[in-house]
Image (cartoon, rainbow, N blue to C red; front, side, top):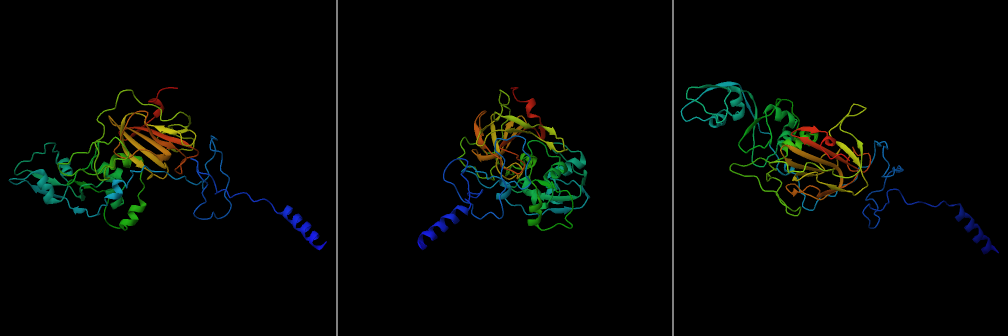
Length: 375
């Protein structure tokens, strides 16, 4: 009787213990395969996530950002692979009298100023001819000597100056390619600068930086490399790549088929969108909008997550953000309609699984919907 009573008590207690659901962090990967536990336990309760096909859901401030699968051939971008020493020379304003055998480049070497800056200050145009006895104004400034493989982004990071300011100070134009041996003006002064590591940490990369300051400097007598046809062929990150000369015929095509959930231009709260956002299911193939060469494939811009940038020639560039998997590499040639990535919700600016898509003419964002076929 005693044993029977104990069994009845145990059964009663079991009925009072609630069933425990698996933790929200224990989930099946989106591409199938066995479920994986997180490397570290989640502290506190995990908030419920909205369904992935729900449009118009408000973004949670603490929403977790998905990871990006990079292509097998990916490597550090040139601005990380080729560090820059902040060793610019301070040059005071002066005058220089041209001597026998002088060239403008030789004068630049003697004074430490940039050839282009001296030419601008004295109204000298290509082929930069000078005359014996001519008095030249040498403009004051902080001049950095560009070395082979250095990028504008790395130079800007080294000095803690926005690359766009360096572009303006040096009147750089398309295609913005630097060359080894050139001296460029670094705006601002050296006084009160923090350490190099702090300056680099404060630098915030954007799409315009990659377009205008992402290519490594050409060495003397060096020609850009030809694009490769496969992502498995790996070009060194410090190798300059030749961009397309002209835009291929046929215009631009939609990168995905989906609903436009954010339009180009200013938003209701005052923010500006340089492109459009298209809601699609996870892992939707993202297609190249036109023939071109991949200028960047990575996740260096945190707001956009998995990111591909393609140059198309004629000054046109396309941008694809929030991808979960990248299928192309820098320096790879692609065709219109070719799958370059899979969609996702990576980057803290993604509200849902979607594709951020931009078209740019030079440095200027253009409304993509004015260039794409009407559906």
